[in-house]
Image (cartoon, rainbow, N blue to C red; front, side, top):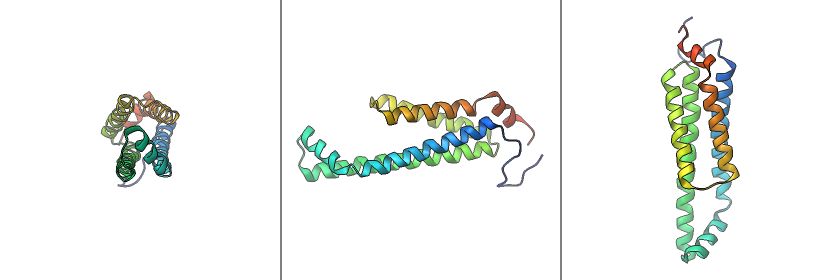
Length: 147
């Protein structure tokens, strides 16, 4: 069966749909977490002043820089997860490898940061479940099927 550009192929396995939903949920969670962290700017500034002895102005700049970097990273990861997931849904099998590599890099970044939190655990669980759905036999067979 041939599909026109922009059309989603038919017969998409449930595991692939579930995986796509999980990648999107992970992206939304990252964006939500980044947005909420901006509400904590004042507390972050105060912690930096107390912990490192920075002047309040310097601490404010450093806190803003950290939050901007965190927000940019969240946007890039969310776009990557959703975009690559969509490309897998469009039967671009290379995108499954790319989204897996993105998830591995993300998880390694979390593990190397040494920051263990409930929110990081949620990220790990969502990424692992989405990855597992995308690499199930049904998904592989569907991706290798007629185009």
